[in-house]
Amino acid sequence: MSKPSLATLSEYRWAIAAVALVGTLALKSTLNKRKRNPRGLPPPPGPKGLPLLDNLLQIPQENAWKVYNEWRKEYGDIIYLEALGQPIMILNSLEDCVALFDKRATNYSDRAEIPAVDMMSLTWSFALMSYGASWRSHRRAFHQFLNHTQVPQYRPVLEQETRMFLQRLLQDPKEFMEDIRYLFGSIIMRISYGVSDFNYNKSLIIDGENLIEGFAELVVPGRLLVNNFPALRHVPDWFPGTGWKRELARLRQLSKRKDGSDKEEYPSIAKGLLDKIRTSNLSPAEALEQETIGRNTAALSYIAGADTSVSSAQALFFALVTHPHVQARAQAELESVIGKDRLPKPEDVERLPYIQAIVKETGRWHVIVPFAIPHLSREDDEYKGYFIPAGTVVMPNSWAILHDPETFPDPFTFKPERYLTPDGELDTSMLDPEVAAFGYGRRICPGRHLSNESLALMAASVLSVFDLAPPKNEKGEPMEIKLETLADSLVA
Image (tube, rainbow, N blue to C red; front, side):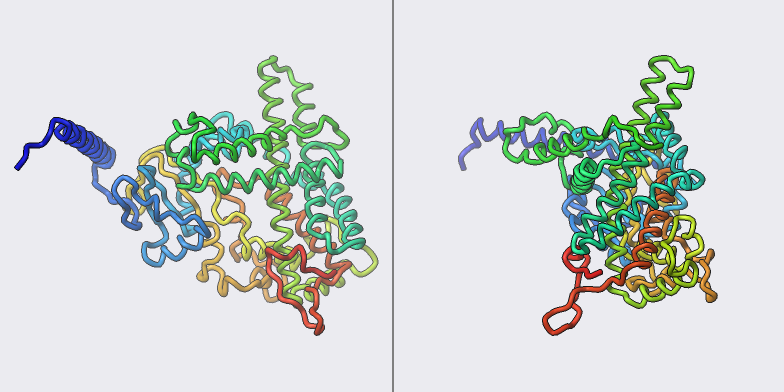
């Protein structure tokens, strides 16, 4: 038998060294985990992963909320994964979301540092900021202008824009999806910046939609390796396989349009915050900080609010078109409460429980954000006998929560009446989908009150004037429509 060559021995030495290094790192990681977890508690259950990659290849890339909801049958409400060493925990029940995000908010209100977010220039968004002083300042500004006691001051804007929406819908019902974009773009542009510019709003809302869609695609765990290996951001753009860098650069340009127009025609969030700066005795540095907070607050109100409101309105139209009995009952309520001589006003919404129930059911039946933006645990924790390491990405599965048959019987059926008492009033004992549809704990969306009221006014106004129906085929039979093709499938 021939002896191994020096080259072969050299290769063996490198292989042995590599194995030793991996083994040392694995041993160090194991000892560190034991030190942090002295009671030896197990992690929550989840699928078994592969060496080094862990569960990276098992993380679903499409309809993940449905996949995790299926996995709960095997693993339970809490599912634990790891991707290249990054711990991930999926919460499929409201009980666990409340226990961690509300009752242990200090530990579970942070956000993960995502390199792709920085590369998209989205670090100005307080929804993505780390939990700290800057986040609290932005949150305070949002609450100041968007809490439920402040929404009534925006009702003249809601009423004016909804009336114009009806006029456009009457002129050309086939363009209703564009009209919906203009409606919510104009409402939120006026409330955010005090600007009413039809064409400007149109371009900004399209940019906002593209930005949010791109963000949602690129921050899915396991989708971009740069989120696990930040050094990859320095790879040259010409290097093969770096198409993701060009996409992030495109989204970065959309993000830079966040400051809006310099015009101020109406009372607005931006104007209110800037007026406060002018009348306060602030140092130049403090004034600059407050101005930045004001611009960021107005920008996020617009970009996030317009996109989610448009998606909610589209789902609401789809529900009404495919459920004519819901339309009929809503129209009967409108005639009984308001009559036929005038259009609904924002103040009327609270006297229209069935209309409110339609809005609630739309948010539950078609969840606009199936997964809330992931939270991050700051410290090691124990919960229900499980060990949750610091730095765990915690993902609440809102879709699973709002389709739980124990809470919402027959969850895939659109049933606004589930929120009503036998005498037709809102049932306060019924779980409001708002608890999951708008985020959790200290990260809950501050614009939810404005969103609900604007959707309810739109629904009431449309049903006061129109009957919504799908188009008919050559035989005069109603055509089947789907949500994704709704833009081409409506007769008003």
